[in-house]
Image (cartoon, rainbow, N blue to C red; front, side, top):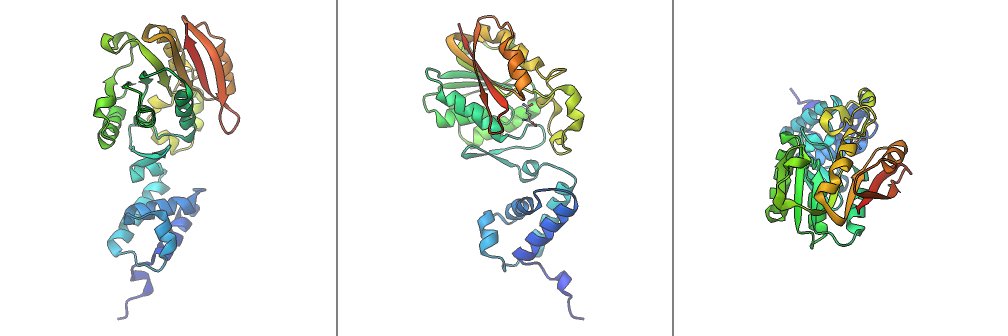
Length: 289
Ligand code: GLN
């Protein structure tokens, strides 16, 4: 009996179209680009190669693997967790369940840190994948020491993988903890304290997209107003940052910027709020008296 067309391995174009159609049917808005990301991941090629060679055959093993990834995406597993990678600035960091996926707005936090003069040693409070610390070390050659902290050991495993992959072992330390009092004395004082803390108000968590909820809730949940961790950082910053140093933080909305900038933070002077590309107050800067 003649083998039916259905059983023939698909071409790249057929696989792309089928993948995009399946994801669209599952209600995923970016179905075309997501199908391409998954297919290029399976084939180990760039997305541009999918466009350039539409008639190439996708071997049946790869076609089956692609289908498995499509099913995972249909179940709202984040694309970055499926591929194990997230682009941030000009780098690609390893990510997976247990760490927050780097967001484009956090690139603004790194931009602002890079624009500040006179710092070399810094603390990254809530490092997650390590994307902030590593970007700062990679992009600012005179940044000498990162002390990257996270309360989650699962997140730190991803940070450690990234430190190894970028061969940045000598650039800093990863540290498991959540108390400023436990920071080893030899790290202090630092010139800069930078953080992308969890800042989503608890009551809003349930309304987040299903795939965001696959990320660790401890990296998202900022308590009742979303500012629990931000306030904790501000209350402790003066003990770890040297005089003339900086505290730089990402936040989620204008109301949070207003609340934080008017907060009594011992030893700190509020400097400025920076808006993101959607005109939302996103980054807040203080300097240490
Ligand atoms: N920007 C993230 C989001 O909106 C939140 C990250 C955070 O709480 N720091 O999903």
